[in-house]
Figure 1 (cartoon, rainbow, N blue to C red):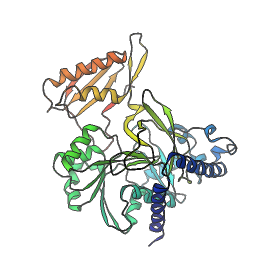
Figure 2 (cartoon, rainbow, N blue to C red; figure 1 turned 135 degrees about the vertical axis):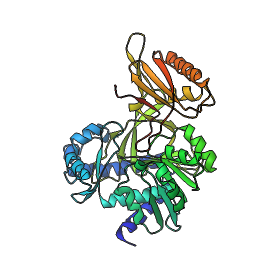
Figure 3 (cartoon, rainbow, N blue to C red; figure 1 turned 45 degrees about the vertical axis):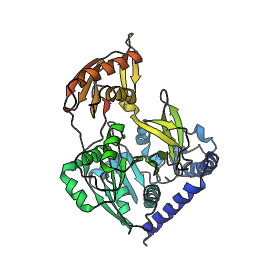
Figure 4 (cartoon, one colour; figure 1 turned 60 degrees about the vertical axis):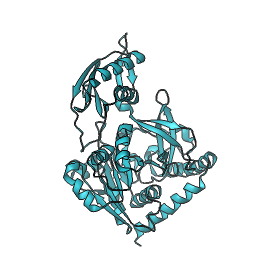
Length: 420
């Protein structure tokens, strides 16, 4: 066993141990206190950004967001590498800088994020995610098909393990270009965005017995179609450029990865919250109190799988995708994607897909599939109008037919247009 595989196996064993050891919230809290203390000592000593923070309570440490991380990139990684240098190296086709692996986000929000990560951290990531998705990976062989955006050295490291055969499928080429190759690969596990899994499901090409949705929000519309076609439960992997945040248990409940990440919560309206994440495993680059834009609905009920890790009822999308519409006085009010999505889907049984785009401050374009019933247009428009009345906002709704699904970027069913 090579060094990388040994490190991944060690991380796998540690993650399995913590899965059984951290059996209640009190144990998780004690564990987090220990790990936060060690991380604070490391960060204060190694990252210039945290100079002078050593004796401050963790709750008083500064929060990061994407812009702060980019502005202070060199002060937040051990190699003192600036974000510009990472961007230039990636543009040259390089994936390493100053002895560290480098990568970037997809830039869905309009600007790319960058990261640096050590080889040791790559294998800790690998061992951790394998422990949650393929808990028998140390003694049973698997064939895993990966169709994820920005396949970086982080994912490629998984192919260095002897018992896992990985097939990589490029989303930028479009699923039509490699669907037959995926089936020829004979995967027992597929990890892909829900739009890809749905495309395969609708064409009878879902051959794997284990399916994971990742890289974008899983809509119940897609889940229903995928599970009906496969006869298997669809599980989720919740991760981003900033780290691995959660994986569904075998019962299909998404649990946060509280064995490697500390979560704080910022209110986002109603039952929705936004996570502020601190990754215990990151030492090459600080990921401490990073404020995410994701909108989560937590579940306080204990999961039947027995895990004490926080359960998530649903990820509703990102705050960037909330629409801002005028009320009677002209002031803008927020409409979250889940509210608009539910209004459209519940309006008519023939609606199996949709897009909502705010194209002006008071104009909403609603796109429905051509297959939807003729009366679906009026039903969906009326349902949205009623929802807007309930929110105290106004907007003109334009209904159009025809939907295109991009495979080279994240699917966002509800979004603000370029005017915003």
